[in-house]
Image 1 (tube, rainbow, N blue to C red):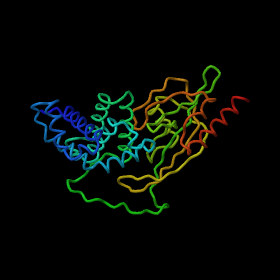
Image 2: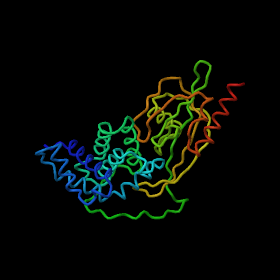
Image 3: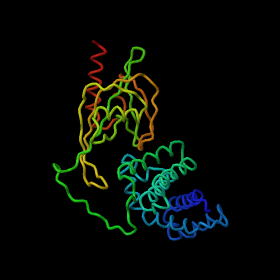
Image 4: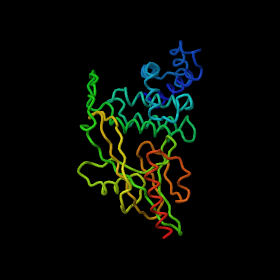
Length: 304
């Protein structure tokens, strides 16, 4: 049986050469692949798979790069290393366009992560995992219930008041340790510190669901306190079309235990920070009112 991981490695090597060399080799892509296959896998019988993957990625490059830019807005495509952006192209192509029976979505993501660990930098695996995980999380399981020649379904322009609502719960998690107050934050692959949150099933109480999501994402047991506020944004759901995501944020207390970052896509770190150091961090603008309110409450409690 052909070694598909080796085949993907050869495709990556060929994409790297094609991308790095610029227009000088763009006219001779078959020669690039054939030469690399002969050098790194002589006699290998998987050349058809490699050729199809290589040429398909090049043909879909504009679409793939657009998705990368949307999934990683703080990283313009030309600022991502040549290795990492081509690993993302391989992973995204297999995630979005490959035959789902041959390459399940999680296989596509895991293979790309392994390529990143083997050929990328120290943080490439986390970066690739974050971008692909973000795309996977946003669109659901690509190809599920798909037919070989499915028609593109146009999502209707639903009025705002009729959009389905999806509940999410999040928390500013704090702990007391040696006379100091600390906050637990998560870091995403786009360079921002933010609050842990997650989707709450419709039949689950928001507070109970938030407790579960914080445990799942950071490994912390929390006690929910007062409501800090909420925000809402519109997102695209592959089945429902446009939906309104409503996030409720709470103040929540935990023990000062080690944080164990879960496997949810898009995150690469989680830490405790002293209350005094929080506002020096890079946050999304819509998080600042929530975090500021929590800091004010906790500072007042500390000084009282």
